[in-house]
Length: 281
Image: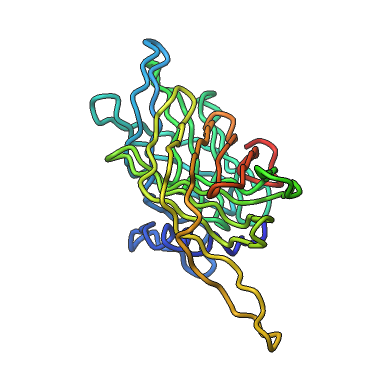
């Protein structure tokens, strides 16, 4: 998949956080390597029905991109820190840099690794019924449909592929919310990025609800051309808070439903999923 410019900075930070051991660092002509990746676990007890919350973790992936095999050391916490090992993973290539993961010995396990977007996702259920979905801290959605309506006669806008990114902070159950590539027709603005910090997160059985009211934002928008016809570049403003914000993130389906209000006039309804060209997630 073509690299998404808005995600370069965030995903670059992730790749800088991924550590390779000296022995396993990729070298020219070498197809097998190991990465220790900082991730966030969503944990649910399928036996008791208790939602155990989200927690920071590291998962260790060894993958051979020539043999299409992999192994994983997965860490999770159900009240006690534990880990599980899966050694017989099949890494099926779906496109350049993207591998779908499955295990012949563990039907509950599924996942993917996408080296284009520096994204990993693993889901599995332990023998004692603990359901774990492990994602990178930046949960993102690239394939979306967005309807932006207004509280006056401004014409409704429909946009595809506005991008949503939620950087999860397990220690205090909050998220940084980024909405990237969206218009405000009433004010004739195209926002490259609207960012809110410390938005409350509720952990649900299937994922997260990220919501709040009167949330301060920092918004970057394309400025209009000046009198000479030269672009004025990108400007920044704090005048477009999220008056309301509610996003239902379903990790099981890898989907999002979001409803929010930008400032006092633009009402957005968005639905979508993570990838535009991979139907399994």
